[in-house]
Length: 117
Image (cartoon, rainbow, N blue to C red; front, side, top):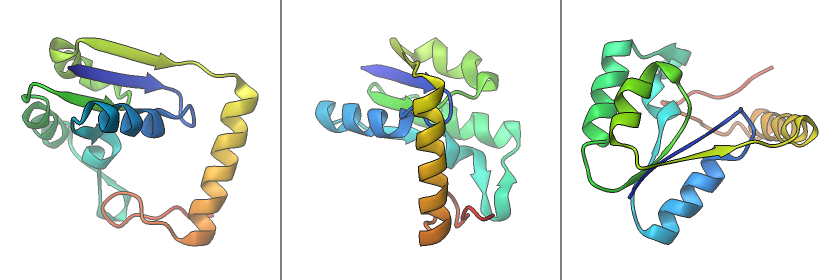
């Protein structure tokens, strides 16, 4: 099964994707992890596309992320698209809470990057 979970920031894409992947016992791919290098340097399109093509060549996966510039790659292989559409109030609360927790705990995100004020 090949699933792409999309939605706005804070909609719960990562949490939902990880839970689906765990239940189905298939890999969960986080597109943000592919898109960011250290010091918040963005991967080039060639780097991102190459990594994505390699990971999506397998038969089963859950892909967490939007990145419309990758649609030509991911949606060729995708069987199901799940769009998380939550209200502004829920999204805002989640983003604020998540950002503050990440800042105060110093949680590492991708490639050693951390959120700051």
